[in-house]
Image (tube, rainbow, N blue to C red):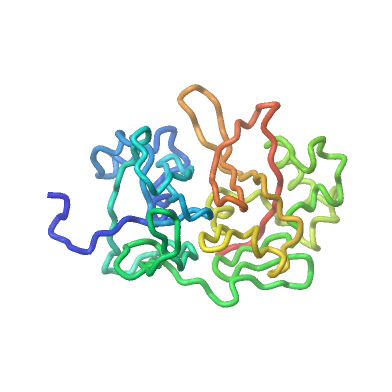
Length: 279
């Protein structure tokens, strides 16, 4: 009944599951129902085929654009839904691979990928170029997968302008926006690398840095990225919540998590990592 006459369904990887959301909608699930999907307003969290950095856990994804982790074992207190996907036979603009190449059993031990249906076996999406990152020698790093150009110093604000933050390089969301504006107008030129078209990355741009085989935090220095913070980075993407709060999406390179922070909360600060360019 669920096959729709096809026999090549699979569990989506985390990038594929996140690709169907809509950050511009207050209720992305209701929006999906206007696009031809049914029962989208029921579950909020869905399983993916992608393992978490700690292989005892699996990544799950929300229609709202966030991610979480769930134990591979049976957890009767938490129910995650299933939404199968298949690869279209016609050419489309594809989602990038997650980078995952390993598979794990229920205990989190590495196992053969053959027949598991896990992300490490299917590896669906646009393949990563080699090398993935190129050091431009001018204080910037180019991601050859996306064409995005990142500051090589992932905590440039804290290194050169520590007085802007009272908490180890963490600032409020509006302060992050203002800092990038200051880079472009010359106020904070030490972080400009000779350019004036920097911006705060959106949620998808920040997420594109995540490697689900080996988190970026594990190999950042080897590709020329310095001062990567393991707490979290602001994106320019807003997220609406029924209780009236306006969140901004945040990305955490050490854990591969995508979360939310309240924009105007005095308790929620994140780091700033400007970007420019892109395909």
